[in-house]
Length: 440
Image (tube, rainbow, N blue to C red; front, top):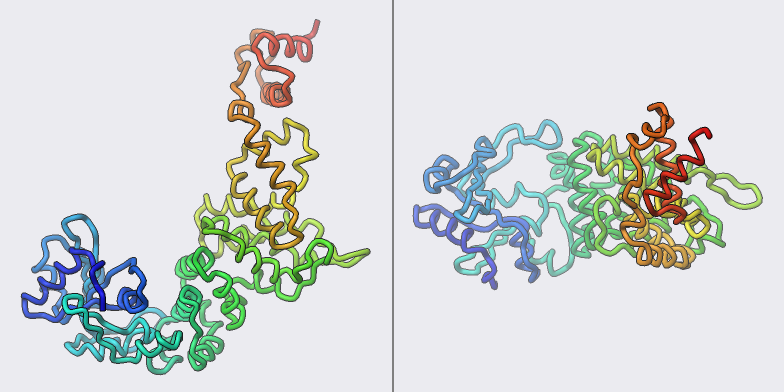
């Protein structure tokens, strides 16, 4: 197997361990990627060397998991690589951590405690030799994500493996093996026992990566989505007016939006997923199907979701703003110039414009508003969007005006006159204040 892209620092770690009489192999996802002809992002090393010995062999190490036989080796260039001792995991108590581990010199035993067959292979990077004790090569050839051993046992050990199976299948465009898929479906509700941060991180990886649509479909099919994002799962089967949404129900619309997204940021990806979560709860039928206020309701629901999954304050603010404003952008051609400019300069507007573009492509396909906003951004320079202040509070005091809340209102109205193009100089601003607010 071709291994020329293995970093020299990794080869140095392997060679150092070998020269000291220990086994040393690449393990996990990097081996899978090599076998698929892909470029690995991470390199993990498995060995029979005790962690204390690893610490003695390398100048810089970080003892991140000594109890589990794991040491991070820091290379001379600052790159870090996890070196883990071959082990057996002895029972799990919390759906995440083994209660105890038993170290071993047997590579095959270490392979059998891992999650999926395609992640359970090892590679000798010096000889280019693949070591497979769990049938990973065959499953790679068949395009299958299969749990090692008994699927229910693998998922009882770590419930997050269920989402990882989905992410792997989505990213590689693989199928999930039948018994593994059935085990995920039967255990889906147990995902509630996993920390919100771990679930959030896995979901973010799914919706921002290649195969995001496939990942969401598998999440829905297995019941994982209903467990961790019931508000999103509720969109399935909610009808929409055909004149605006010929593509079908709300869930179909969101899936199409995910498909149209091109390498979205995390906040844009989450906004695509959440922007219509207010529709199921605002659904009514009068002369036609309506979702009155679903943007405002959805923004409140999005805040609850973000809080539950412990997204950062900055990301939560952005996602809620995009959800709240995703309908307002349709009215930009009718806005007063000052109102339009204030909208265009909002920090979230570039992502809102992309959200709107994707929203249109996934429904009626009309991009006239998107083109209007793009043209406005091209035509209006930064100084026109944020014109320098012509007057300050000190100027208002010189007119004899009393400092107070009215100052903010006066300065806001003054900026509005600037944005409308009616004022552009300090002299004109002084005259405007004199006529508008100073008694003659």
